[in-house]
Length: 182
Image 1 (cartoon, helix red, strand yellow):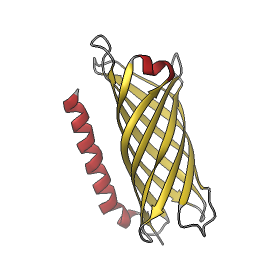
Image 2 (cartoon, one colour; image 1 turned 90 degrees about the vertical axis):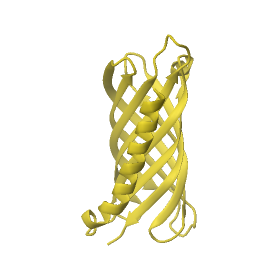
Image 3 (cartoon, helix red, strand yellow; image 1 turned 120 degrees about the horizontal axis):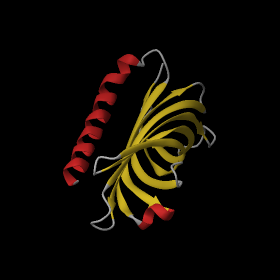
């Protein structure tokens, strides 16, 4: 499983670099951004009985319709290890869409963004079994702008996966947001 986790990290890094390099041409006529984060995915509730914390990754883009409201398209992965040899490692792939809000007045140097998303999660066990279920997620990001286009960011999220038994995963991640302005 460590090869899969390493492979996923390289794929995520490559996707973040490509998005940062290629999206300016695609999004030049709009106000868009791309955000990439990495950190730890923490199983919560009954999911924590069988799984240890693992790698958490996310990649999202937001189309801003004004200075404080946008539509966010997101994807994330949480790679969790089984607590014993009898429990296989599992990867949760999340994908969602929903509003993103700037929660503090624009005059502040620090920014606080919140998002809500509806979507799905595909759960893949290392044994090859997979299932896809409806997901609701919430996220908060504290951001510090380094310049007009590049922000450092970090914060928690919560994914509620509505499988046979509701599963909760709370990634805590840090990363960057790159803004494409008009």
